[in-house]
Image (cartoon, rainbow, N blue to C red; front, side):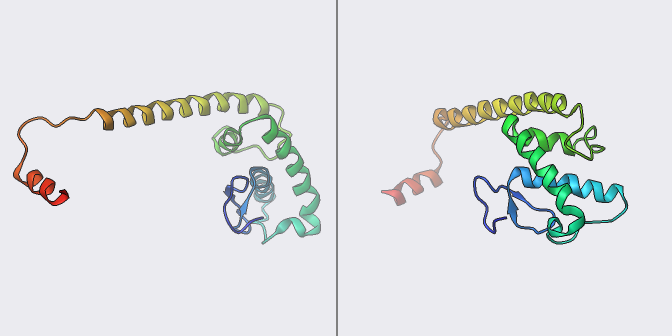
Length: 146
């Protein structure tokens, strides 16, 4: 866990509020769901140090690291927070890989759209020309700049 945000630690931990890696965030999310499923309520501060959650958290963390190596972390989190993924309580879910692949294609499409929009915005700022007469206020501004 890190107190400051970095390239690796982008996500805020639900239990501590500090920044953590994507795999840690995903593992905590799964443990939180397991606790809610068993009617235990929210997890304690640094719950992975307790005897009850130590093994479960480490197991989910290993699985999360495997997923993050194979897939885009944004797609994994998107699937787990979606309506279809809200009932997934472990990263060993059989259809999780297929669901993540679908989400990856959606994330890539959104990235491409964002790149196109940003590119178009940059071009419109360069090509803008003023039409009509120059106002007296703009003439005064030019005189101030000189």
